[in-house]
Length: 632
Image 1 (tube, rainbow, N blue to C red):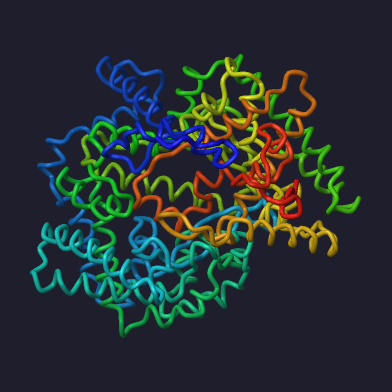
Image 2: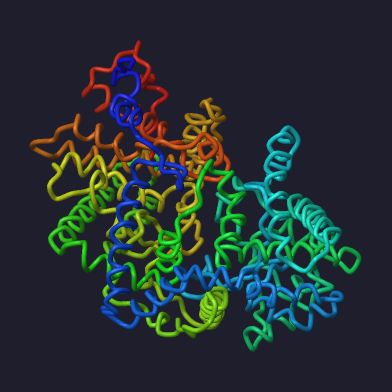
């Protein structure tokens, strides 16, 4: 093994030995860091689910229902016997459509049943007034990972992936009553309709600027652009009233809608909807269909083997009953001592952030005051919520139903609950992540940070790790999420989460210059699996930079600060070994930068890195002081 100097490559210096030996599970695209914690939580919870099911001893009604769903997934004998029948009976409604007028009669039913439509609507927090909800409209998603795959220069990748998709769709359609000729036509029409969608909807890079999704339009205007669909009638059927405005997330899509959906190409839509709905149902049908239906997604990520029945049962159950499962995990496996310690770390980071903002050289006094106010109003959600939201009382089903019918019932409850909120105020006490999820987030419309219990373990955090290690791990991640309040998107929202320009023009100009510098620092970097798009990942890179800046500031005030421990644990957090296909996919679909760059680039912006390891101009992890970037 080639000896690596830490001054040349922090990531591989710390992680190479582990990476050389690590084996990626056959049913996953990667191992290491977040993924390993997720595997550990999954094993732990599967064991608990099996014990509860075997003993019929449940902590509460929520977990009893969750276990009943878990058992329904594991009932392979029944699912195999049912085959595709449960879905085909439902999907026949799509096949029987005769035209636009016919679809208009059943449009609200199609929405509530989750059938694919040529547009999507949902109830979201209103970004201009986050105490209220709004109705948002956007286009359907494309088959390929991103619209860039449909552009010139991507022909080889496009044909290869669509070839895999076509083979998968062909195998699944064999389970229907369609003739071979009809099967071929349905696939051909689906691809034609998908190609039109790709010319209208946003790319992942465009979606990454989420504040640009806020485009209010009068409902009457939206309705006229969605003709020949009867949009106003649909809204009245769904909500009992017609909202005055709709937030259009993709204006380009809406303006081009008539070219996508009309009486002339209704058959294209119908065949596309049939194929999409059937493929989307395969995971809750027979095991053979679950295997066939996962072919395309597994190919995208380089996964050799589909998820086992037991793992899939847990994954589906923990998704649909996320809060009860998360609360169970948090109460059982996350201690009060650790919760107290981590909350202290959070408040220390927030207070240090306030100090740094007050000293920031790109902000004038008035803007600093607003930024500090935003930090003061930031809500902190650590570990798990105090109780299960009452929504889960509605999540009931008939144990005698097929798995397909059970999932359809539960998904309809989710949709009904979401739609019922349109006229209600926003509940900012809700958690957007459950306790068993290995992740963390900043919610811009609530101005809060959420850290589920499952991420609060080594290497991110442990009461047994040193303070320096914890700051290089969970501390920097906490700082990262706080920094999202001041990234290129979050900076456009005020202390209440409302879209509101609280910057002076001069301050904003300086911030945009820093943002452009951050784009440039990453843009165009060549990796073995592709080239980095600096603009696409800039918000996450601003957050990484801010997380390191604030925790290094805390380190500077500590008596026994160990910077080597700090930087080594920082690199451990981002350790990952992944399939080449998955690494390539992430460059197109993930707003986070490649893990090697997340480990290696942020330290170069800080003098502590150079002082700790005596990094010189001749070392690979050196950049000139004039090119170093510190925003927050």
